[in-house]
Image 1 (cartoon, rainbow, N blue to C red):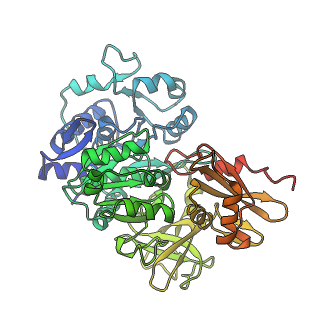
Image 2: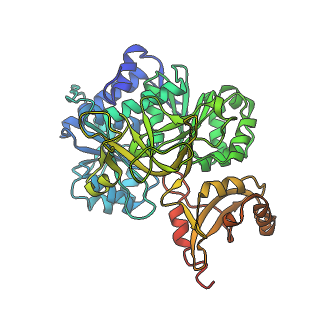
Image 3: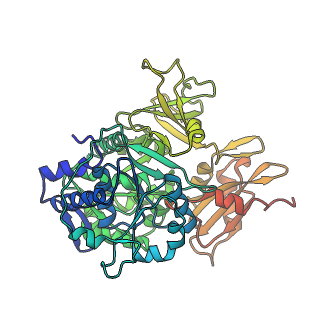
Amino acid sequence: MPKLFHQTLTNTAQKTPQADALKLKDQQLSYAELTSRVEKFAANLSQLGLTINARVAIYLPKQFESVISYFATSLAGGIFVPVNPLLKGAQVGHILNDCEAEILITSLSRYKQMRAYFEASNSIRRIILTDCTAEQVPAECVSWQALEMQTVNVRGAPRISQDIAAILYTSGSTGNPKGVVLSHNNLIAGARSVAEYLNNRANDRLLAVLPFSFDYGLSQLTTAFISGASVVLMEYLLPRDVIKAVAKYRITGLAAVPPLWVQLAELDWPQEAKASLRYFTNSGGAMPQATLQRLRQQLPNSAPYLMYGLTEAFRSTYLEPVEIDNRPTSMGKAIPDAHILVLNQQGEETQAGEEGELVHRGPHVAMGYWNAPEKTAERFKPLPQKIATGLNPEIAVFSGDTVIRDEQGFLYFVGRKDDMIKSSGYRISPSEVEDCVYQHDSVSEVAAIGVPHQALGQAILLVIKPADAASFEESDLLKYCQKQLPNFMQPKAIKLVADLPRNPNGKINRKQLVAEYAGLFERE
């Protein structure tokens, strides 16, 4: 079994060298071909002066060069830093400076657009451009094509599973994003756990639509490669493109976040897609019940896996498909090789039905935040002595999420500490309001947020993308809410938008909405 990140690829290449590893449009690379390019590029990185633990930032969309860069950096002994291709200048500049990246891999067009931010970095020594010849490349950069034409000896760096493999930057709604530091062991443990409960196999074909800077997106590579499966890379423009790709490539596994699932559920799936898709997964937020119901109707032969995770611990829980009908709102139980605790403010395990904070212990727990000891200490803390099982203090990740465990041990999400709405003395989960609103036919997407209100503390505002703006009737939806929700959960107002704002990982950016509508009720 692999011990290091790059071994998820190289070990499989030794077993099934001719099997497809990556596909991009009409191009494909076998495991042997991909490994050969990874080994050559790793040697080139070493020749360029890459040292042990040096950070390599990869600022590219999903393409062969992105994947090669991650695995080559790992093989050469460096630390790879995927940068979300949707990020702009200031955000990219922050990441480069924060992790002190020494090498940047990007495209010529991105380099031209962001040159000022790259030049402002005090640490960047080399910039490798993927899409230009040696003649086209600026003098201060290096051509990927030229590097691949060189013949150099492969030199794998001495590494162990506890060494740092990657830094993933969480998308910050306010302030700068934090770099989550992941060891080789973190990435391997996560891949093993997820591949186990998804029953990934060599004949699986996974469609990668999520950014690789998102741990949920990166895991599409690791879970596939550790199983000998293939990955189809995709940068989609429209949700319908995703469905077309499922049919074209006979995709067996599809991972997405709730906003994308909401859109996919509203479309018709062709028979080819329904026939191939073995399972679909959701993480990054609770999937609305109405969306799940529509997807199950569209995809009766596809097993739904509802998952909960956080970048600081990769993945924490999943709900087995056989339990969907019994407890459709549950987050499920711990993934393999994880122990999930629900602790109260006194650091004691809660009783069934009692709210508490979700705490994750196990090999998936990240090493902390890069260059941020105070923030690390807030989230990564020793388990209380009465709970710890080892001789030395054990560091667990305290999620900040409020959950409830039932008598059978199944977990239910209540809300994030930052997202919980406090109105008229009640603590209200936005997801509970949203699940109700999603049942109304006039709503395509919704975010329920708490807005300051002098009398209520916070009032509930619904920010809605309507299914049809021309026919949307606010009074109809408010009457529906009056029938379905208790008085203290009634929305105070509704705002219609063409699209809800999202962070770079595709999640609804709630903090942006809260900031935008903060003064809505100031005159009341």
